[in-house]
Every structure is written in structure tokens, then in C-alpha cells.
Length: 184
Image (cartoon, rainbow, N blue to C red):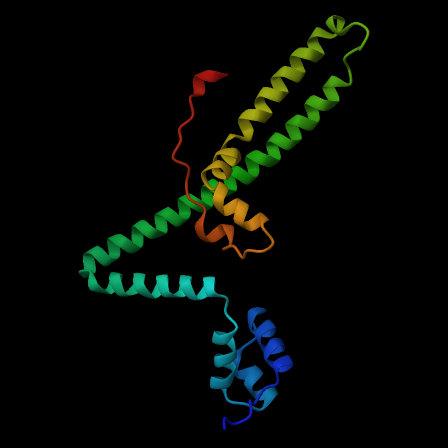
């Protein structure tokens, strides 16, 4: 017969939640009167399958990196860092472009209000302004839309409440499409 668990199911759930919030293993072990190993077992047991799979990929990558000669290890780590920086920069550009597009569309909308419904041609300046603002807004949203299109499967998985998705910061892939700037 197995010995009784040191933590009740409710305590295990609480420990798991607090670990996820960043509390320390030793502090929780002291509070619950158990050893740090018990808290670590709760941590490992409560991890979703996706987290375990990513952890295995990280461990495999570290093993593969260690197998390379030192110079190639440096090159691989540098390349990975550059790729992360590019991804972060693209995500920031997409976010700023999206905010700019939103603001420009709002300005275009306020310009539309100046157009007289009875005689729209009498408001040609306002109509031109609407067209210019709308075109600029659409161009501003290009990076965000391209990133979303390149990562549509990940975005769909994040929108699906039945699935757990990785953080955007972890794995947004850079788009592979190029934009023809002569289309304006």
C-alpha cells in the first residue's frame, strides 16, 4: 500500500498556481512543511503536455549545441539571438503599425463626416483626404497583417479556448512574403 500524499489535492493545486505566479520552491516547501523535492514534483506533475514537449526541445537543442565545436556553438547562439531580435522587432513594428492604422482610420472617419451627403462632389478636398488617410492606414497595417497571415495556425490555436497555445513572444515566425512598394 502506498504512503499517503504529503499534500492534499487542494494544496497541490494552490502550490501549482503559486509556482506559476513565480513564488520560490523553498519558500513554499517551508510554508507547507515539506521538502523542496515534493514541491518540485508538484511542479512537474502539473505541467501541461505542451510545456513538457517544449522543455524536451530545449534540452535536445542544448545537447545538440554542446556537440558542436566551440566556434560553431558561438555562431549558433549568435544566430539564434539575431533571429529572436528580428522576431521581436517585427512584432513591435506590427503593433505600432496597427496602432497607427487605427488612428489613421479614425481620422479618415472624421473627415468623412465633413462630406455633404446631398452634394458629395462639393466636398472634393474632404474626399481626397479620406482617400489619402485610408491608403496610409492600410499601408501602416501591412506588417501586422503579414505576421498574422504567416502565423494563422498559431493565431487560430490561441483563439480556440479548448487548446493551449505558446506565447506570441516565443514563436512568431517572420513572414516570407515581400511587398511591392509600387502599388500605392
